[in-house]
Image (cartoon, rainbow, N blue to C red; front, side, top):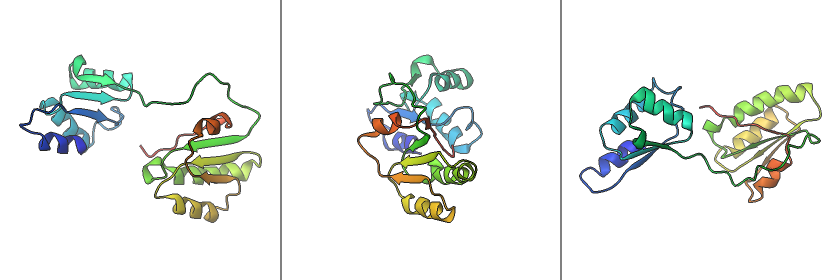
Length: 173
Protein backbone atom coordinates (compact mmCIF):
# COMPACT_ATOMS: atom_id res chain seq x y z
CA UNK A 1 0.00 0.00 0.00
CA UNK A 2 3.00 2.32 0.36
CA UNK A 3 3.11 2.94 -3.39
CA UNK A 4 -0.56 3.87 -3.46
CA UNK A 5 -0.21 6.16 -0.45
CA UNK A 6 2.92 7.83 -1.86
CA UNK A 7 1.30 8.35 -5.24
CA UNK A 8 -1.84 9.85 -3.71
CA UNK A 9 0.09 12.06 -1.28
CA UNK A 10 2.31 13.48 -4.01
CA UNK A 11 -0.38 14.08 -6.63
CA UNK A 12 0.19 17.42 -8.32
CA UNK A 13 3.66 17.86 -6.81
CA UNK A 14 6.84 17.76 -8.87
CA UNK A 15 8.14 14.61 -7.16
CA UNK A 16 9.61 11.52 -8.79
CA UNK A 17 8.18 8.32 -7.32
CA UNK A 18 10.17 5.12 -7.55
CA UNK A 19 8.23 2.08 -6.42
CA UNK A 20 9.76 -1.12 -5.19
CA UNK A 21 7.92 -4.37 -5.89
CA UNK A 22 8.86 -7.26 -3.59
CA UNK A 23 6.09 -9.53 -4.92
CA UNK A 24 6.85 -12.66 -6.86
CA UNK A 25 5.06 -11.64 -10.05
CA UNK A 26 4.03 -15.21 -10.96
CA UNK A 27 2.38 -15.90 -7.58
CA UNK A 28 0.51 -12.71 -6.82
CA UNK A 29 -1.21 -11.91 -10.12
CA UNK A 30 -4.61 -12.77 -8.66
CA UNK A 31 -4.37 -10.68 -5.52
CA UNK A 32 -6.40 -7.49 -5.36
CA UNK A 33 -3.42 -5.64 -3.86
CA UNK A 34 -1.31 -6.68 -6.86
CA UNK A 35 -3.98 -5.40 -9.23
CA UNK A 36 -4.04 -2.12 -7.28
CA UNK A 37 -0.26 -1.84 -7.74
CA UNK A 38 -0.52 -2.50 -11.47
CA UNK A 39 -3.26 0.13 -11.82
CA UNK A 40 -1.03 2.62 -10.00
CA UNK A 41 1.96 1.81 -12.22
CA UNK A 42 -0.01 1.94 -15.45
CA UNK A 43 -1.77 5.19 -14.55
CA UNK A 44 1.52 7.08 -14.52
CA UNK A 45 1.38 7.79 -10.77
CA UNK A 46 4.77 6.09 -10.46
CA UNK A 47 7.84 7.07 -12.48
CA UNK A 48 9.93 3.91 -12.10
CA UNK A 49 9.42 0.36 -10.82
CA UNK A 50 12.27 -1.54 -9.13
CA UNK A 51 12.03 -5.34 -8.77
CA UNK A 52 14.31 -7.95 -7.18
CA UNK A 53 15.14 -10.22 -10.11
CA UNK A 54 15.61 -10.10 -13.86
CA UNK A 55 12.89 -12.76 -14.12
CA UNK A 56 10.42 -10.46 -12.33
CA UNK A 57 11.52 -7.57 -14.56
CA UNK A 58 10.89 -9.61 -17.69
CA UNK A 59 7.57 -10.82 -16.30
CA UNK A 60 6.37 -7.28 -15.58
CA UNK A 61 7.44 -6.06 -19.01
CA UNK A 62 6.01 -9.02 -20.94
CA UNK A 63 2.82 -9.80 -19.05
CA UNK A 64 1.84 -6.31 -18.00
CA UNK A 65 3.07 -4.56 -21.18
CA UNK A 66 5.21 -2.14 -19.21
CA UNK A 67 7.99 -0.27 -21.05
CA UNK A 68 11.52 -1.65 -20.56
CA UNK A 69 12.73 1.75 -19.40
CA UNK A 70 10.08 1.79 -16.66
CA UNK A 71 11.16 -1.45 -14.92
CA UNK A 72 14.63 -2.08 -13.52
CA UNK A 73 16.01 -4.74 -11.21
CA UNK A 74 18.19 -4.28 -8.16
CA UNK A 75 19.04 -7.47 -6.29
CA UNK A 76 19.07 -7.65 -2.52
CA UNK A 77 22.59 -6.69 -1.46
CA UNK A 78 24.81 -9.17 0.30
CA UNK A 79 27.92 -8.15 2.23
CA UNK A 80 29.11 -11.78 2.16
CA UNK A 81 32.09 -12.64 -0.02
CA UNK A 82 31.21 -15.73 -2.01
CA UNK A 83 34.73 -17.03 -2.50
CA UNK A 84 34.74 -19.68 0.22
CA UNK A 85 33.76 -23.30 0.23
CA UNK A 86 30.80 -24.73 2.06
CA UNK A 87 31.83 -26.60 5.18
CA UNK A 88 30.76 -30.19 5.13
CA UNK A 89 32.44 -31.09 8.42
CA UNK A 90 29.83 -29.28 10.50
CA UNK A 91 26.26 -30.45 10.68
CA UNK A 92 24.76 -27.02 11.20
CA UNK A 93 21.77 -25.49 9.46
CA UNK A 94 21.51 -21.71 9.52
CA UNK A 95 18.53 -19.38 9.11
CA UNK A 96 18.98 -15.61 9.23
CA UNK A 97 16.35 -12.88 9.29
CA UNK A 98 13.92 -10.79 11.26
CA UNK A 99 11.89 -12.86 13.70
CA UNK A 100 8.42 -12.07 12.39
CA UNK A 101 5.42 -14.04 11.17
CA UNK A 102 5.99 -13.79 7.42
CA UNK A 103 9.45 -15.37 7.72
CA UNK A 104 7.90 -18.71 8.70
CA UNK A 105 10.29 -19.64 11.50
CA UNK A 106 7.46 -21.38 13.33
CA UNK A 107 7.02 -23.67 10.30
CA UNK A 108 10.78 -24.22 10.22
CA UNK A 109 10.77 -25.28 13.88
CA UNK A 110 7.88 -27.68 13.31
CA UNK A 111 9.80 -29.20 10.40
CA UNK A 112 12.98 -29.26 12.47
CA UNK A 113 11.22 -31.36 15.10
CA UNK A 114 10.97 -34.10 12.46
CA UNK A 115 14.67 -33.76 11.68
CA UNK A 116 15.61 -34.03 15.35
CA UNK A 117 13.45 -37.14 15.70
CA UNK A 118 15.43 -38.87 12.95
CA UNK A 119 18.95 -37.47 13.31
CA UNK A 120 20.96 -36.70 16.42
CA UNK A 121 23.88 -34.87 14.83
CA UNK A 122 22.45 -31.84 13.04
CA UNK A 123 21.71 -28.53 14.78
CA UNK A 124 19.72 -25.47 13.72
CA UNK A 125 20.74 -21.90 14.44
CA UNK A 126 18.31 -19.04 13.81
CA UNK A 127 19.95 -15.61 13.88
CA UNK A 128 17.83 -12.49 14.15
CA UNK A 129 15.81 -10.10 16.25
CA UNK A 130 12.13 -9.32 16.18
CA UNK A 131 8.72 -9.56 17.79
CA UNK A 132 8.41 -13.37 17.61
CA UNK A 133 11.48 -14.23 19.72
CA UNK A 134 9.55 -15.32 22.83
CA UNK A 135 6.94 -17.17 20.78
CA UNK A 136 9.68 -19.08 18.93
CA UNK A 137 11.48 -19.93 22.17
CA UNK A 138 8.20 -21.20 23.62
CA UNK A 139 7.61 -23.28 20.52
CA UNK A 140 11.08 -24.81 20.92
CA UNK A 141 10.13 -25.82 24.46
CA UNK A 142 6.72 -27.11 23.40
CA UNK A 143 8.30 -29.22 20.64
CA UNK A 144 11.11 -30.29 23.01
CA UNK A 145 13.77 -29.21 20.57
CA UNK A 146 17.26 -29.78 21.94
CA UNK A 147 19.48 -28.69 19.07
CA UNK A 148 18.04 -25.29 18.19
CA UNK A 149 19.67 -22.02 19.09
CA UNK A 150 17.97 -18.67 18.52
CA UNK A 151 20.63 -15.97 18.60
CA UNK A 152 20.48 -12.20 18.44
CA UNK A 153 21.56 -10.62 15.19
CA UNK A 154 25.29 -10.04 15.03
CA UNK A 155 27.58 -7.82 13.00
CA UNK A 156 29.73 -10.94 12.47
CA UNK A 157 27.07 -12.60 10.34
CA UNK A 158 29.57 -13.71 7.71
CA UNK A 159 31.16 -16.04 10.26
CA UNK A 160 27.74 -17.59 10.93
CA UNK A 161 27.30 -18.31 7.22
CA UNK A 162 30.81 -19.75 6.94
CA UNK A 163 30.27 -22.09 9.90
CA UNK A 164 27.11 -23.65 8.46
CA UNK A 165 26.75 -26.48 5.98
CA UNK A 166 23.23 -25.50 4.93
CA UNK A 167 21.42 -22.17 4.75
CA UNK A 168 17.62 -22.40 4.93
CA UNK A 169 15.27 -19.58 3.99
CA UNK A 170 11.81 -20.19 5.35
CA UNK A 171 9.00 -17.88 4.30
CA UNK A 172 5.25 -17.75 4.04
CA UNK A 173 5.45 -15.85 0.72
